[in-house]
Image 1 (tube, helix red, strand yellow):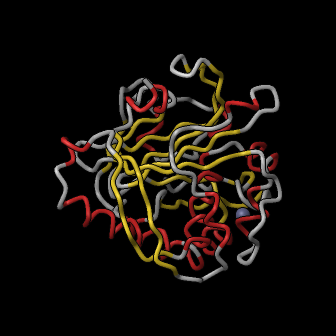
Image 2: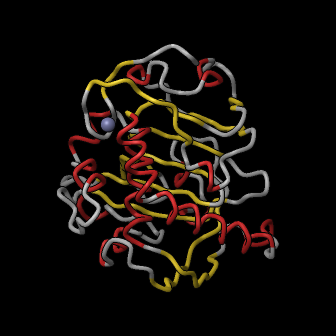
Length: 262
Ligand SMILES: [Zn+2]
């Protein structure tokens, strides 16, 4: 792990020394030994994943002390750490507490209601920063995610051709999972989707890239969190969530396997 890696930072795009960072933030619960799946071996990732991830043949990987990636420079790591991580981790901790009082097995695939205080814009920017870490840089560039992430106050998306969905990822035998962008033919709705997924219990996110060709079906039956851009930076609100409790499968894009889609 001590080897210095100089490569393109996935947020600012500059060739710099890349630093290890917990993805998702350590304070959100990513501090223990984590068993995780990485469903697609992207060559450009090189040694950007923690050592355990190098053996792609395994059915799963184990990362000690939390899951770490090395895809961002220290400036970008520090910027997101200072400005967005608290909003993300505070919500994750609240959600973890809520889940302790729920019989998760009985509630799988059901919608759960939460009323929680959150800083929506900060949270949204952290989620997109997490995706920047796992997406190839050309995808980050194409959708101009870095412009949105690096400007704290920016509320409009420079490129709008994506959607971002959220679910509750079960913490009982749950799954850490990272799926870089890939296309999946979804037999449930008879259409082709392109997206990426992060499951980091207690939360999971699906990033869907919209296409002009399949315009009519650019929507998943999950709550979108794009509207969190309606709030300004550091604005805290009581947010009402109806989020499905899901257990991601090891299949490339989990939505294909959720019972919601059958
Ligand atoms: Zn950077």
